[in-house]
Image (tube, rainbow, N blue to C red):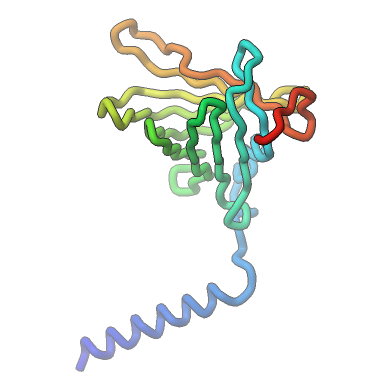
Length: 181
């Protein structure tokens, strides 16, 4: 008889939780300290390489009642990728998990003293099966643009080498906006 009672109580608890979750909007993450540290990156962007050429477009949206920032990247040469970005209250750090057909990046960190989002972790290349230390820094600029700078560690030279640098320009403010993006 006891296993039946335990199973019944578990089913009742699950039903109650589901019913509570379906009534009203979830509370969101507004109360979390640092939750809005990465909000400067939210928007629709054209991304330019250092030589001024269009590297791609990026759509950065807040979802899950402010608990998650989703990134949808479309590269000018046909690449694509997706990331989930969130403040993790368990580790008290921001975390980004990026996935594309060519690789996976998982890193964490937070705002540095200059107000830049600075994350550090690893990149994994699917085709090679190799992983390397990796860093990303997002700098909000006074003109409303954001500079994104990625570096990958090279153990042979004991140095951090540039991997990608891009300037994010809000699409509605981009005088060089490309149609069809």
